Image (cartoon, rainbow, N blue to C red):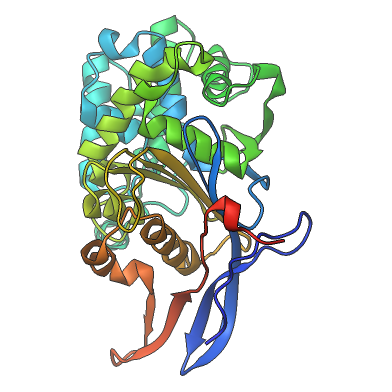
Length: 371
Protein backbone atom coordinates (compact mmCIF):
# COMPACT_ATOMS: atom_id res chain seq x y z
CA UNK A 1 0.00 0.00 0.00
CA UNK A 2 1.27 3.46 -0.87
CA UNK A 3 2.19 5.79 2.01
CA UNK A 4 -0.46 8.15 3.31
CA UNK A 5 0.06 11.72 2.13
CA UNK A 6 0.43 14.38 4.82
CA UNK A 7 2.64 17.05 3.27
CA UNK A 8 1.36 20.47 2.21
CA UNK A 9 1.81 20.99 -1.51
CA UNK A 10 4.01 23.85 -2.64
CA UNK A 11 2.27 26.60 -4.60
CA UNK A 12 2.18 25.58 -8.26
CA UNK A 13 3.02 21.92 -7.62
CA UNK A 14 0.64 19.06 -8.32
CA UNK A 15 -1.92 18.52 -5.54
CA UNK A 16 -1.32 15.47 -3.36
CA UNK A 17 -2.93 12.13 -4.11
CA UNK A 18 -6.01 11.71 -1.92
CA UNK A 19 -7.64 8.59 -3.38
CA UNK A 20 -6.29 5.57 -5.29
CA UNK A 21 -8.47 3.46 -7.56
CA UNK A 22 -7.34 -0.14 -7.17
CA UNK A 23 -8.12 -3.40 -8.94
CA UNK A 24 -6.74 -6.69 -7.62
CA UNK A 25 -4.08 -4.82 -5.68
CA UNK A 26 -2.95 -2.74 -8.66
CA UNK A 27 -3.40 1.04 -8.61
CA UNK A 28 -5.15 1.88 -11.89
CA UNK A 29 -5.59 5.61 -11.34
CA UNK A 30 -5.34 8.30 -8.69
CA UNK A 31 -7.36 11.34 -7.68
CA UNK A 32 -5.42 14.39 -6.52
CA UNK A 33 -6.92 17.26 -4.60
CA UNK A 34 -6.84 19.84 -1.84
CA UNK A 35 -8.70 19.96 1.49
CA UNK A 36 -8.84 22.71 4.09
CA UNK A 37 -10.62 23.15 7.42
CA UNK A 38 -10.98 26.59 9.05
CA UNK A 39 -12.93 28.13 11.92
CA UNK A 40 -15.48 30.96 11.67
CA UNK A 41 -12.73 33.60 11.81
CA UNK A 42 -10.95 31.95 8.88
CA UNK A 43 -8.06 30.55 10.96
CA UNK A 44 -6.59 27.44 9.35
CA UNK A 45 -7.13 24.31 11.42
CA UNK A 46 -6.16 21.49 9.07
CA UNK A 47 -5.06 21.30 5.46
CA UNK A 48 -3.59 19.09 2.81
CA UNK A 49 -2.58 20.56 -0.51
CA UNK A 50 -3.05 24.25 -1.27
CA UNK A 51 -5.64 26.15 0.81
CA UNK A 52 -5.25 29.13 -1.54
CA UNK A 53 -6.26 27.24 -4.65
CA UNK A 54 -8.85 29.30 -6.55
CA UNK A 55 -12.07 27.47 -7.38
CA UNK A 56 -15.43 28.42 -8.84
CA UNK A 57 -18.17 27.99 -6.26
CA UNK A 58 -20.61 26.38 -8.67
CA UNK A 59 -23.51 24.93 -6.64
CA UNK A 60 -21.80 25.41 -3.28
CA UNK A 61 -22.97 29.04 -3.59
CA UNK A 62 -26.65 28.12 -3.34
CA UNK A 63 -27.19 28.36 0.45
CA UNK A 64 -25.62 31.83 0.41
CA UNK A 65 -27.40 33.05 -2.72
CA UNK A 66 -30.72 32.08 -1.16
CA UNK A 67 -29.98 34.64 1.57
CA UNK A 68 -30.55 37.35 -1.08
CA UNK A 69 -34.25 36.47 -1.09
CA UNK A 70 -34.43 36.42 2.70
CA UNK A 71 -32.58 39.76 3.01
CA UNK A 72 -35.18 41.27 0.69
CA UNK A 73 -38.03 40.10 2.94
CA UNK A 74 -39.03 37.11 0.81
CA UNK A 75 -39.49 34.72 3.69
CA UNK A 76 -42.29 36.79 5.18
CA UNK A 77 -43.71 38.03 1.87
CA UNK A 78 -44.08 34.52 0.45
CA UNK A 79 -44.55 32.68 3.77
CA UNK A 80 -41.64 30.41 2.87
CA UNK A 81 -41.55 27.10 4.75
CA UNK A 82 -38.34 25.24 5.70
CA UNK A 83 -38.81 22.61 2.98
CA UNK A 84 -39.05 25.40 0.39
CA UNK A 85 -35.86 26.98 1.69
CA UNK A 86 -34.12 23.61 1.47
CA UNK A 87 -35.15 23.06 -2.16
CA UNK A 88 -33.96 26.56 -3.11
CA UNK A 89 -30.52 25.77 -1.61
CA UNK A 90 -30.35 22.42 -3.38
CA UNK A 91 -28.91 20.57 -6.33
CA UNK A 92 -31.80 18.13 -6.23
CA UNK A 93 -32.16 14.85 -8.08
CA UNK A 94 -35.36 15.77 -9.93
CA UNK A 95 -37.49 13.23 -8.15
CA UNK A 96 -41.22 13.71 -7.69
CA UNK A 97 -40.72 14.97 -4.13
CA UNK A 98 -38.60 17.83 -5.49
CA UNK A 99 -41.04 18.65 -8.27
CA UNK A 100 -44.03 18.64 -5.92
CA UNK A 101 -42.28 20.97 -3.46
CA UNK A 102 -41.42 23.49 -6.15
CA UNK A 103 -44.80 23.30 -7.89
CA UNK A 104 -46.62 23.94 -4.61
CA UNK A 105 -44.42 26.98 -4.00
CA UNK A 106 -45.06 28.39 -7.47
CA UNK A 107 -48.83 27.89 -7.17
CA UNK A 108 -48.98 29.65 -3.83
CA UNK A 109 -46.81 32.56 -4.94
CA UNK A 110 -48.69 32.91 -8.22
CA UNK A 111 -45.93 32.45 -10.77
CA UNK A 112 -45.43 29.86 -13.48
CA UNK A 113 -42.67 27.26 -13.64
CA UNK A 114 -42.49 28.10 -17.35
CA UNK A 115 -40.30 31.04 -16.28
CA UNK A 116 -37.49 28.64 -15.35
CA UNK A 117 -34.59 29.09 -17.76
CA UNK A 118 -32.21 26.44 -16.39
CA UNK A 119 -32.84 23.97 -19.20
CA UNK A 120 -33.46 20.26 -18.77
CA UNK A 121 -30.61 18.54 -20.61
CA UNK A 122 -29.31 15.46 -18.82
CA UNK A 123 -32.00 15.65 -16.17
CA UNK A 124 -33.26 14.35 -13.86
CA UNK A 125 -30.18 13.18 -11.99
CA UNK A 126 -32.08 10.34 -10.33
CA UNK A 127 -31.69 7.28 -12.59
CA UNK A 128 -34.92 5.60 -11.54
CA UNK A 129 -36.95 8.73 -12.18
CA UNK A 130 -35.23 9.24 -15.55
CA UNK A 131 -35.97 5.63 -16.52
CA UNK A 132 -39.64 6.02 -15.56
CA UNK A 133 -40.00 9.20 -17.58
CA UNK A 134 -38.38 7.54 -20.60
CA UNK A 135 -40.64 4.51 -20.24
CA UNK A 136 -43.73 6.73 -20.13
CA UNK A 137 -42.57 8.90 -23.02
CA UNK A 138 -42.39 11.99 -20.79
CA UNK A 139 -39.76 14.62 -21.49
CA UNK A 140 -38.32 16.22 -18.34
CA UNK A 141 -39.19 19.87 -17.87
CA UNK A 142 -36.85 22.48 -16.34
CA UNK A 143 -38.46 21.96 -12.94
CA UNK A 144 -36.62 18.62 -12.80
CA UNK A 145 -33.26 20.34 -13.37
CA UNK A 146 -30.99 20.18 -10.33
CA UNK A 147 -30.68 24.00 -10.35
CA UNK A 148 -34.40 24.82 -10.59
CA UNK A 149 -34.47 25.66 -6.88
CA UNK A 150 -31.64 28.17 -7.29
CA UNK A 151 -33.31 29.71 -10.33
CA UNK A 152 -36.49 30.05 -8.28
CA UNK A 153 -34.62 32.48 -6.03
CA UNK A 154 -34.12 34.83 -8.99
CA UNK A 155 -37.76 34.48 -10.05
CA UNK A 156 -39.09 35.20 -6.57
CA UNK A 157 -36.70 38.13 -6.19
CA UNK A 158 -38.12 39.50 -9.44
CA UNK A 159 -41.69 39.18 -8.21
CA UNK A 160 -40.80 40.77 -4.88
CA UNK A 161 -38.99 43.67 -6.53
CA UNK A 162 -41.59 44.20 -9.24
CA UNK A 163 -39.03 43.42 -11.93
CA UNK A 164 -39.74 41.71 -15.23
CA UNK A 165 -38.62 38.09 -14.72
CA UNK A 166 -37.58 37.54 -18.32
CA UNK A 167 -33.83 37.60 -18.55
CA UNK A 168 -33.30 37.03 -14.82
CA UNK A 169 -30.19 35.00 -15.72
CA UNK A 170 -28.46 38.04 -17.20
CA UNK A 171 -25.79 39.59 -14.91
CA UNK A 172 -27.30 43.07 -15.19
CA UNK A 173 -30.82 41.98 -14.18
CA UNK A 174 -31.78 43.48 -10.78
CA UNK A 175 -32.40 40.01 -9.30
CA UNK A 176 -28.99 38.84 -10.47
CA UNK A 177 -27.33 41.92 -9.00
CA UNK A 178 -29.08 41.35 -5.66
CA UNK A 179 -27.88 37.73 -5.69
CA UNK A 180 -24.29 38.75 -6.47
CA UNK A 181 -24.32 41.43 -3.78
CA UNK A 182 -25.35 38.85 -1.20
CA UNK A 183 -22.62 36.43 -2.30
CA UNK A 184 -20.12 39.29 -1.94
CA UNK A 185 -21.45 40.06 1.55
CA UNK A 186 -21.20 36.41 2.61
CA UNK A 187 -17.60 36.23 1.39
CA UNK A 188 -16.80 39.66 2.86
CA UNK A 189 -15.73 41.35 -0.38
CA UNK A 190 -17.11 44.25 -2.39
CA UNK A 191 -19.41 43.32 -5.31
CA UNK A 192 -16.92 44.88 -7.75
CA UNK A 193 -14.25 42.48 -6.45
CA UNK A 194 -16.19 39.38 -7.48
CA UNK A 195 -14.46 37.21 -10.06
CA UNK A 196 -17.19 35.65 -12.18
CA UNK A 197 -17.84 33.04 -14.83
CA UNK A 198 -20.96 31.47 -16.34
CA UNK A 199 -22.24 28.34 -14.62
CA UNK A 200 -23.61 25.33 -16.49
CA UNK A 201 -27.21 26.37 -15.79
CA UNK A 202 -26.69 29.86 -17.22
CA UNK A 203 -26.31 32.08 -14.15
CA UNK A 204 -23.11 33.59 -12.81
CA UNK A 205 -20.70 31.61 -10.69
CA UNK A 206 -17.99 33.13 -8.49
CA UNK A 207 -14.33 32.26 -7.85
CA UNK A 208 -12.67 32.24 -4.42
CA UNK A 209 -9.83 30.52 -2.63
CA UNK A 210 -10.61 27.12 -1.15
CA UNK A 211 -10.01 28.51 2.36
CA UNK A 212 -12.68 31.17 1.65
CA UNK A 213 -15.17 28.44 0.78
CA UNK A 214 -14.36 26.68 4.04
CA UNK A 215 -14.76 29.93 5.97
CA UNK A 216 -18.17 30.57 4.42
CA UNK A 217 -19.30 27.09 5.44
CA UNK A 218 -17.96 27.60 8.95
CA UNK A 219 -20.16 30.70 9.08
CA UNK A 220 -23.13 28.68 7.78
CA UNK A 221 -22.52 26.13 10.55
CA UNK A 222 -22.43 28.77 13.30
CA UNK A 223 -23.74 32.14 12.09
CA UNK A 224 -24.72 33.12 15.63
CA UNK A 225 -21.05 33.13 16.69
CA UNK A 226 -20.09 36.01 14.39
CA UNK A 227 -19.03 39.04 16.45
CA UNK A 228 -21.19 42.14 16.08
CA UNK A 229 -18.28 44.02 14.52
CA UNK A 230 -18.11 41.47 11.69
CA UNK A 231 -19.90 42.85 8.62
CA UNK A 232 -21.29 39.38 7.92
CA UNK A 233 -23.18 39.35 11.22
CA UNK A 234 -26.21 40.98 9.55
CA UNK A 235 -26.63 37.80 7.52
CA UNK A 236 -26.72 35.54 10.60
CA UNK A 237 -30.52 35.19 11.07
CA UNK A 238 -30.98 34.33 7.40
CA UNK A 239 -28.07 31.87 7.35
CA UNK A 240 -29.49 30.19 10.44
CA UNK A 241 -32.84 29.71 8.69
CA UNK A 242 -31.13 28.23 5.61
CA UNK A 243 -28.85 25.96 7.65
CA UNK A 244 -31.69 24.59 9.76
CA UNK A 245 -33.86 23.99 6.69
CA UNK A 246 -31.10 22.02 4.94
CA UNK A 247 -30.45 19.92 8.03
CA UNK A 248 -34.17 19.26 8.52
CA UNK A 249 -34.79 18.26 4.89
CA UNK A 250 -31.58 16.63 3.60
CA UNK A 251 -33.51 14.65 0.98
CA UNK A 252 -34.54 17.95 -0.64
CA UNK A 253 -30.96 19.21 -0.73
CA UNK A 254 -29.86 16.14 -2.70
CA UNK A 255 -32.19 13.21 -3.15
CA UNK A 256 -33.58 10.04 -1.65
CA UNK A 257 -31.01 7.84 -3.43
CA UNK A 258 -27.23 7.96 -3.89
CA UNK A 259 -26.55 11.59 -2.94
CA UNK A 260 -23.66 12.13 -0.54
CA UNK A 261 -24.83 15.51 0.77
CA UNK A 262 -28.07 13.88 1.90
CA UNK A 263 -26.29 10.82 3.28
CA UNK A 264 -23.82 12.92 5.30
CA UNK A 265 -26.56 14.98 6.93
CA UNK A 266 -28.46 11.81 7.78
CA UNK A 267 -25.38 10.05 9.17
CA UNK A 268 -24.56 12.97 11.48
CA UNK A 269 -28.00 14.49 12.15
CA UNK A 270 -27.94 18.04 13.44
CA UNK A 271 -24.14 18.23 13.21
CA UNK A 272 -23.36 18.93 9.57
CA UNK A 273 -24.59 20.87 6.55
CA UNK A 274 -23.13 19.76 3.23
CA UNK A 275 -23.37 21.06 -0.33
CA UNK A 276 -21.58 19.84 -3.40
CA UNK A 277 -20.65 21.74 -6.54
CA UNK A 278 -19.77 20.56 -10.03
CA UNK A 279 -16.16 19.75 -10.90
CA UNK A 280 -15.73 17.90 -7.61
CA UNK A 281 -16.07 20.70 -5.06
CA UNK A 282 -17.76 20.25 -1.68
CA UNK A 283 -18.38 22.68 1.17
CA UNK A 284 -19.21 21.31 4.62
CA UNK A 285 -20.27 23.23 7.70
CA UNK A 286 -19.56 21.35 10.93
CA UNK A 287 -21.71 22.50 13.84
CA UNK A 288 -20.27 22.79 17.34
CA UNK A 289 -20.30 19.70 19.52
CA UNK A 290 -18.19 16.78 20.68
CA UNK A 291 -15.89 15.14 18.14
CA UNK A 292 -14.21 11.77 18.07
CA UNK A 293 -10.57 11.73 19.18
CA UNK A 294 -10.29 15.44 19.97
CA UNK A 295 -11.29 17.79 22.76
CA UNK A 296 -12.35 20.49 20.29
CA UNK A 297 -16.06 21.25 20.15
CA UNK A 298 -16.01 24.40 18.04
CA UNK A 299 -17.76 24.86 14.72
CA UNK A 300 -15.71 24.81 11.54
CA UNK A 301 -15.94 24.66 7.79
CA UNK A 302 -14.29 22.19 5.45
CA UNK A 303 -13.80 22.56 1.70
CA UNK A 304 -12.56 19.90 -0.69
CA UNK A 305 -11.66 20.06 -4.39
CA UNK A 306 -10.50 17.19 -6.59
CA UNK A 307 -8.13 18.25 -9.36
CA UNK A 308 -9.55 16.04 -12.10
CA UNK A 309 -13.21 17.04 -11.71
CA UNK A 310 -13.89 13.41 -10.70
CA UNK A 311 -16.47 12.44 -13.31
CA UNK A 312 -17.22 9.18 -11.51
CA UNK A 313 -17.48 11.02 -8.15
CA UNK A 314 -15.70 8.14 -6.43
CA UNK A 315 -12.71 10.31 -5.47
CA UNK A 316 -14.87 13.09 -4.06
CA UNK A 317 -17.01 10.62 -2.15
CA UNK A 318 -14.09 8.75 -0.62
CA UNK A 319 -12.10 11.87 0.29
CA UNK A 320 -15.12 13.68 1.77
CA UNK A 321 -16.05 10.86 4.14
CA UNK A 322 -12.42 10.21 5.10
CA UNK A 323 -11.77 13.90 5.82
CA UNK A 324 -14.86 14.19 8.02
CA UNK A 325 -13.84 11.05 9.88
CA UNK A 326 -10.34 12.45 10.43
CA UNK A 327 -11.62 15.74 11.86
CA UNK A 328 -13.73 13.74 14.31
CA UNK A 329 -17.22 14.45 12.98
CA UNK A 330 -17.99 10.87 11.97
CA UNK A 331 -17.63 7.99 14.42
CA UNK A 332 -17.10 4.37 13.41
CA UNK A 333 -20.82 3.68 13.08
CA UNK A 334 -21.34 6.69 10.80
CA UNK A 335 -18.35 5.73 8.64
CA UNK A 336 -19.76 2.21 8.25
CA UNK A 337 -23.15 3.68 7.41
CA UNK A 338 -21.43 5.67 4.66
CA UNK A 339 -19.33 2.70 3.53
CA UNK A 340 -20.38 2.78 -0.13
CA UNK A 341 -19.18 6.39 -0.28
CA UNK A 342 -16.08 5.93 1.88
CA UNK A 343 -14.64 3.17 -0.31
CA UNK A 344 -16.77 3.29 -3.48
CA UNK A 345 -16.87 -0.21 -4.98
CA UNK A 346 -17.02 -1.37 -8.59
CA UNK A 347 -18.83 -4.58 -9.53
CA UNK A 348 -18.81 -6.82 -12.57
CA UNK A 349 -22.06 -8.01 -14.24
CA UNK A 350 -22.15 -11.00 -11.86
CA UNK A 351 -22.09 -8.91 -8.71
CA UNK A 352 -18.44 -9.59 -7.89
CA UNK A 353 -16.35 -6.79 -6.39
CA UNK A 354 -13.93 -5.79 -9.15
CA UNK A 355 -12.43 -2.48 -8.01
CA UNK A 356 -12.39 -0.07 -5.10
CA UNK A 357 -11.53 3.59 -4.49
CA UNK A 358 -9.43 3.90 -1.32
CA UNK A 359 -8.70 7.20 0.45
CA UNK A 360 -5.08 7.49 1.56
CA UNK A 361 -4.13 10.82 3.10
CA UNK A 362 -3.70 12.47 6.48
CA UNK A 363 -5.45 15.74 7.21
CA UNK A 364 -3.22 16.93 10.04
CA UNK A 365 -3.37 20.12 12.13
CA UNK A 366 -1.74 23.04 10.35
CA UNK A 367 1.04 23.34 12.95
CA UNK A 368 2.19 19.84 12.08
CA UNK A 369 2.40 20.32 8.30
CA UNK A 370 5.74 19.85 6.63
CA UNK A 371 7.07 21.61 3.55
